[in-house]
Image (cartoon, rainbow, N blue to C red; front, side, top):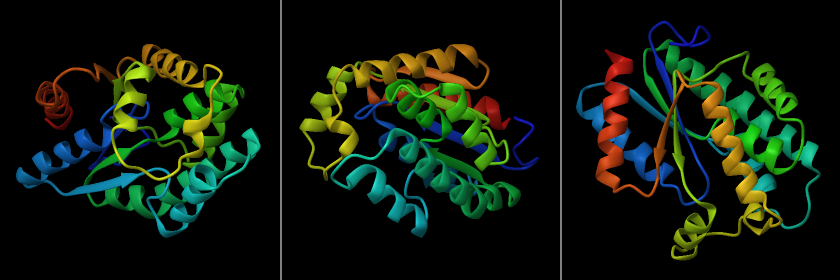
Length: 212
């Protein structure tokens, strides 16, 4: 367990590009843990709080450009509030927090994707969260073209980041894999094209080891 997390709770995050199946896997994991009698808090970024919903609209659904540094700071503001008001209290109460996206998303999307300095983006997030790192990060790795096909097949609201071209999705994927390679003890990297039930089984195996 990371030194920044509570001595009782566990913090698990899911990362990956659009269409990788994060929402499905986080929901299945939460259901499984709750069936075992564990207290589970399901969170997300951006938009996991009332303030976060407003920030989510600004960074994801507002039409028009947002300067890359402004975008990174908005995500960090959402993250700071989410950790202070949702995640830390849950960890202190002994819950397992399962969160869809965290600081690795900012490093991948605003760092590599927007071509800001990834280390600067990471430092901003660590400052915003007082250094909290997940105990486990599950990266669902997927070819961006496959992710786009999956997203096109499902109804959804306008997402400003989906309109970014110029190799943006490929840079994001490569950044995720670099982050995971640098922190192998924290990451579980899975091929998101595997059958859903196989992914469920592999995630449960790793989480069982974490909680034992």
